[in-house]
Image (cartoon, rainbow, N blue to C red; front, side):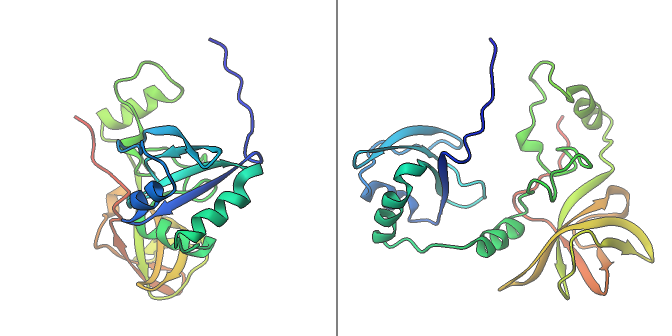
Length: 223
């Protein structure tokens, strides 16, 4: 089969519905067949509008993703707000993303890092046939060759992404994201595997940091 990719980003609005009451809200909107299995998705109707409803919201939190045509987005948004949904801005999403440890494009997901370093083991197939990068990924797993890993980090102060992470005055990694949250200053950073992981104390610019293990990330080799 020949497949041609097309950019549809300007034709659709994508909303993440987060929280334990998400399923009830979807039902209140008139959707009767609500997807349950992780990553499953269906075409659903809300009033006369057709949307794509996925049983995931890109975070390790209960909820759904709604993909809505831009032409109906304003009307559906108003209808959802009427159900008591609280809109969250980009800053809150970034807080949740970093707290969960979800890597983001242009920050943690760049050509400088591979999926295993980014903690995305659950997103990679070790059984599928040949695909671009498959041999490299397989070797890294077989020979336990992941040289750096993405971790969360608690910080004593906000630090600019890109700041080196140091241990005893030696560079051991780099900060990729940082934000202030109700739980304190949190960030994501790549750390060299050989120097350690969770619980490691490091310096990042003028701040002190402690490496933590966010729930989204996985660093276990596959047998």
